[in-house]
Length: 133
Length: 133
Image 1: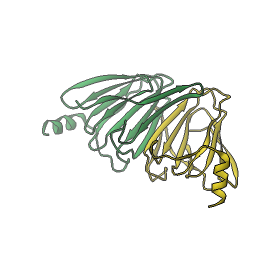
Image 2: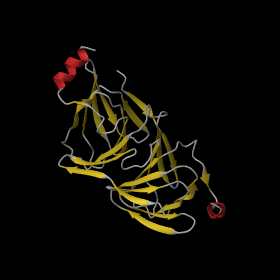
Image 3: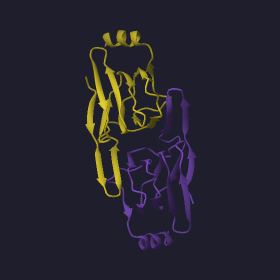
Image 4: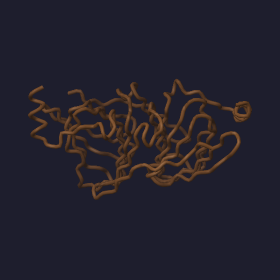
């Protein structure tokens, strides 16, 4: 599975912490969209879809979340609970994000704009299409 | 002065809050670098420089910060204390960020990579060069 954790620069100094990610360097694509998710109730599961064409780079800036990824053959869980590591997802990965801590601030960088992004919303369709690849 | 506040999409739902900014749309440039500043002591002032060539888009995702901008002719203060508005800075603006609230999570999107970004670090040089433009 091509989902992978990627270290990102963290500079901890007397005047605060800084985390940095650059297109093509830590983030293996041109960043077209940035979004941030927060104030998520602990019982909520987000995602439950796969993008057909967009790659993503996740960073949990504050708190912690869990992520389940599935490429149609294999499933994996990741704990994102530190701000100096990102999780890269290529296109075509079914994903769920859950167990948001109360203070979680979850940053997402995406390779496609919202209007260009195409989703699988149905898991059976996703599995069937992945099997035909 | 071309520094301006730009509204960004905020979707508040039962399953959490989402704020979104896209290159060229809300953010008037291609995003090449993303960084985030947090755990800043309240007495610290960050910045105190101007980029010669990079534009920036600031979003205060959590908490509050104050920003002073200066184009060499005029100075302005902005309070960034909500996650549904960004502050756009074109290149050539001297800036200071201060009064970070304890919980502030301050997101910066930049139009240049770190290595391509050129700074004025000295205020007098900045003022002199702006006067010659």
